[in-house]
Image (cartoon, rainbow, N blue to C red; front, side, top):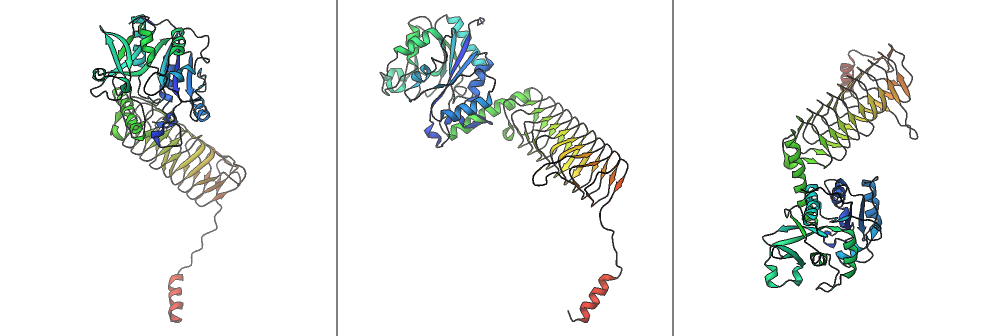
Length: 469
């Protein structure tokens, strides 16, 4: 394979309405595995080292630009506007000003084609190098090519592409189809686009006309891709089908890297999630963008991990939910625990069933095993938090901090009214409402003394009988 030395930019067409989606949302913003459709071709272009990427927007241009910029805040993006839907060639031409002065090759991609692999695009660039012409293209071979543009060859060399509506019966019998994905020399591209006319059944400016113009200047390079990889999305059925393929691709990669997925068909893992070897993931688990799972982690059925990290050897028991949380090594979480943003757990922490945390830093070996809320809290090492404990962190206006030192024991059904501190080694008796700081090594108890009245039940029954009740 020849080494590509030419500078690279990319144009990604994101202007279509997508009327068959039956939605008020622009087609390229419909999500597939947690990201909009257009995120995938944009990311592939960036992975290949494109120094400038131009999304061409049209329908709901402001919304598309806002969402794309949020996804790629540091990427070299320049947006171009296609004011009218006049065909793919017109859409690409809209990017000319954004790439003014660029000298190199331009990748042309589509915002509704999410399954295209980086490796295929690298092969396309290599085919461009090898052919030595001004254009290379991706083709695919279909048993039933109905509806697709046919790739016409003479003596094995590509001469042009003819669209289905413009093709003769003989041309329609050709099974090699145009995927619409190109690598084009920039100088040729802008000159050729100016020559294209809407002389076709649709009355549109066809990007496919580039192929015939390029073939007159030299060989057209080709790379054949699987039809699944080049498939677009036109409706919600196709959206779900593409998501299924992408999910299987991602899950297979994790399993080959040493991760056990107990039921890959029900495991949802987004593209940029990291999972270490020897980890096990149960059925119905969802691991979303930004999550990093260490080695030897066990994630039980139904867990949701979003933008969180789980360190080596930890266990997430079934149906636990983590959002922007940091879990240390050998933690045991759940079942039915909820770790909200700002949760940071040291090593060997145990949080049990129906425990909720938010902006809570919890030290080594501390435990809260039952029915507890720890919000805006800083908890030391070796603490035991009893069932039903609540940090009362919100007074209706401000949120305040609860601080527990090392080795603190909190009895069940305790309310810690922030701001409050409990010193190292202190005990808080069950049922206590803590409103003042507790010094180290102290016992705090605020409940009323117990009163026991022996024989009270029998006396009550006797009084009721005397009244005939």
